[in-house]
Length: 177
Ligand SMILES: [Zn+2]
Image 1 (cartoon, rainbow, N blue to C red):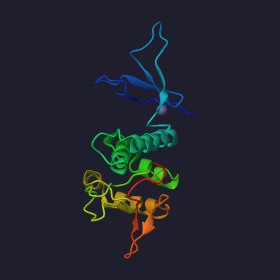
Image 2: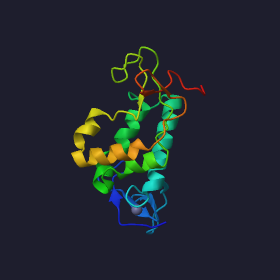
Image 3: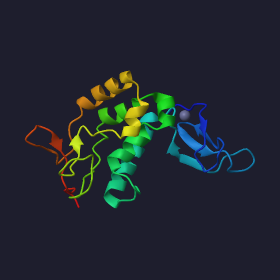
Image 4: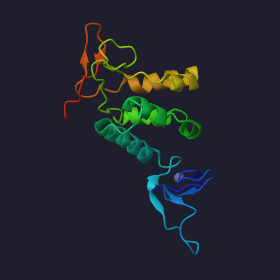
C-alpha cells in the first residue's frame, strides 16, 4: 500500500490534523515522543481510493438498513460523499465511477409508499439512480458524460424490476428486512 503526503482535517480539528501513513490516516495530535498513537483505521482519500470508496459504500449500506443517515436517502448520501468537494479536488469523478465499476452502488435503498423520492409517483427509485441536484450542478458537462458512461454498464441492484416504460425501479421495501 502506498503512502503519500496527504494531510487534511479528519479528526475533528479545523486545521489539517490527519496525515497519511501507508494508505491510512493518523491523528497528528495524538501520541508522544514523535510516535502517533491514534489512527490507522480511516483509508486515505488521496492514495487509498479503492478502500475509501468501499468503506463509504459500506456506511451507506449500513445506513440504509439502520436509518442512521439522518435526513437523507442512502443513495443521495453516497452520491454526495463520493462527489464531495474533497473527492472532486483529489480525483474528479473517479470515486463514483470506481464505485460503479466495482459494483458498490448496490445500496439497498428504497422508498416507502408515500415517500417523496424524486417525484416518482410510486416513490420508487429508478436505476441508474438520479444524482442529487447539488452534485449535478457541481459537475462539468464532460464529467457528467464520464459518469453516465461509468454507470451505464452497472447492473441494477437486486430486486429492481422494469416498469411499463422500461425504467428499472427499486423495490418498495428491501427484501431482507
Ligand atoms: Zn495517502
